[in-house]
Image 1 (spheres, one colour):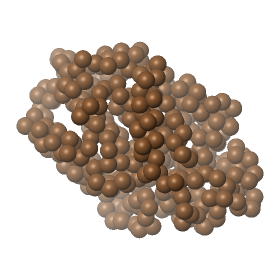
Image 2 (image 1 turned 90 degrees about the vertical axis):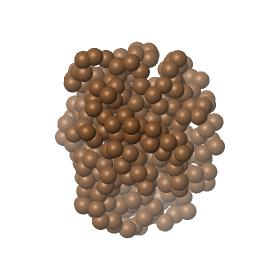
Image 3 (image 1 turned 180 degrees about the vertical axis):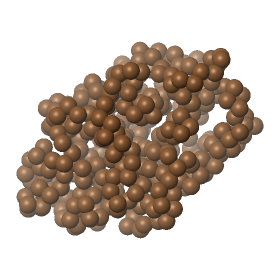
Image 4 (image 1 turned 90 degrees about the horizontal axis):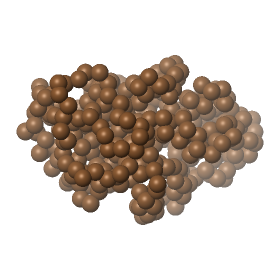
Length: 374
């Protein structure tokens, strides 16, 4: 079964998760564009309270000197491209929070592959706590026989290969999401070819669970979700382990990234060497890819479902220092350190059902630029 066929299951799962006890309470202003702003304009980073409240400081577009006349074009584009939720944060504060159709602020949505960012950071935390080392063979945590390759070939694949999409496993199989041993066969030597192969990535969850000897959701909740006030859950959908949460929870994770793993003085990931490797080019085969993070501003890039190398920046209209979580059907988490911006978009596919980057990225950033440039 292909991942696109899971969409109906994802909708069902979303409904179930939205009823869970850790969902954020609904706001009376679910459809509001911008809540009242704080004054005067603060410049330090804001961290919303970690308790289950709707409290979150805001800023107005007027106070930032943004071009408010452009916001209607942005909303028109978002609404006409199947958007459910859209948020822009500046220095951690909400400038825009907009929901479309029947979607509300306390509704949960699938992150799809944008959730790879969560797994990447959790891997770094597990390494920091000495449960694993990313240079270790994957077999050290999955055991012998997790693939159909001879053990000599299995031992050549490391956790770092899983993080960088360079395992060398055969991506011409019928289902690249499959994690069964018969789907995991040799094609290239590890670290010699980049391909967006989802099966080896998904197995990282088992690597972390086995290394820490705990449930994957429980470890994620303890190390990332609860300390920064997120809600949500990883749910098994076919072969995939998909994270569901509110748009605000995705925005919280964006703040954590812009603060390099620190939440209001609490270190979530203190290993700066890992954080820097995670959010910068991780190998020379696809400069636009870190440890499961997409990177803008590189000279070349490769895309999922393709062997082609493209010239230029991944998202030409976006700032060069942008890094992102990009998921199927245009789930977007953009983080821009130079502008102290976090941008969240959840919804349905704008056009084609693509696994990560799409033309939607560049079109959206053209409109964001028109809004924020002054």
